[in-house]
Length: 288
Image 1 (cartoon, rainbow, N blue to C red):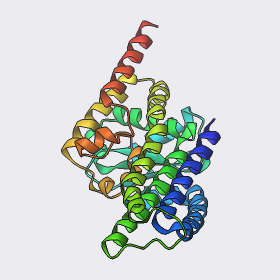
Image 2 (spheres, rainbow, N blue to C red):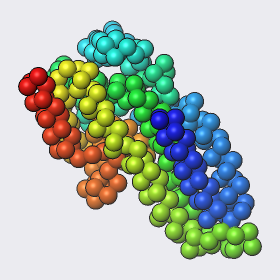
Image 3 (cartoon, rainbow, N blue to C red):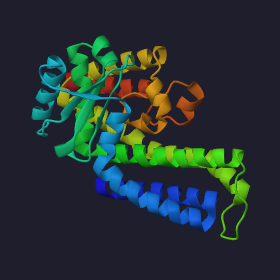
Image 4 (cartoon, rainbow, N blue to C red):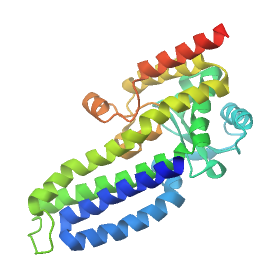
């Protein structure tokens, strides 16, 4: 089913990109947006992981640079019967983590310096069991594509905003919605892109929590980690994520800090609900 979800996501985001182009520039804008969409589809499949890692300044590490983290990931990958992913560290005090890559053979996991500072080994194992579950389910391709194309839609809408400020465009007989259409796209296109991301993100987080807890054998470790990460993220905002909001759904907890934005466009289920499910899973395991 993942290939179907990926195809559907690509189709929806491509359609949005073309619609934004039409609203901004009529038929000419639609053609240009279509060309951009084709290039983006190709690029997001092959290079979206590299784009995301570069956006956050992630540095690849090995067993010498990050022995504990590398050892945890290696052990979990072996247990999950997955190829060893590349391991990255993001120099950022906000504790968080994400996985990316188009398939298990080209996967990467990343940890911020903040998460390494506040979680113990048991909790880190829970977090990266969760992330490797995304790799196993091939959620990472969907996440990276959504981040890349969703970001492109936001950029086009931003371009439309500046075009209107500096004179806009007149209706040229090619169609499109003129000033009103451009204004609607400035407001609605980024929202629509985020709603599509949200639709594929919430269920996959629950699934990754469940499989990750089984992989680590310790649901309470992941529950404890999620609680710590949620609290710390509110105290130490991730400014890089505010700059790249289309990537927010990739992280294990939502890095966006604004409460209105967080609740309206949250790509993650409520942390309290995730913790509740993990605790129920732990109780069920104990009874067995």
